[in-house]
Image (cartoon, rainbow, N blue to C red; front, side):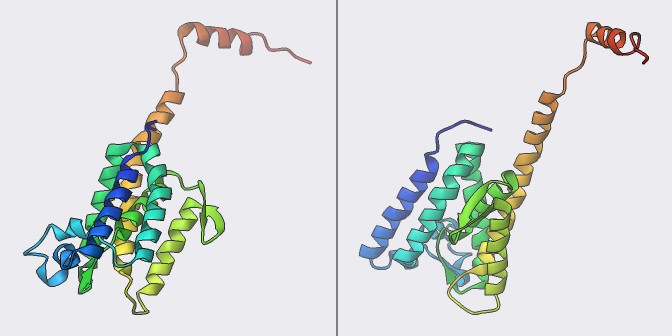
Length: 211
């Protein structure tokens, strides 16, 4: 685990807030940078730019709160560079999954990716979801079930993007976790010296007491 201060998560939040302010005061800005499925081949960069746009104040607040809470934890656990990798990679995968919709915007896919990565890395870590404490893996499972259910009820929520981001985050978390666990396991294993082996033999094999 890298002991680094979290700050990229804060920077991403600041960028999203600034971009939202521009959305409010600049006509046509949102339409120019949001993800429109029919135009993605002409404007592939919108797979990334759409991640920083939001449709309303509540949309922004919910995503930024989740990014602050889960993002800072993940960045602390894996370091800033890997955190950015999780954010952008899961966000792009989520944007790709959102092509099922006419258009989409928001950081939700990347936030779900962060949640998925945390669930893989710290499955037993307790978090609060909707006012209820639960392990991180249970929280990720709950979000996944809610989005699966949401796919059967038409709304303005890009459920497939959430699912894609979450699953991708879990996959990345497992990839990051495996070498770390092996390293920790190896660090606990230590070969005995000849002297220690001889001492153990003398103590336990050649000095047996009989009652």
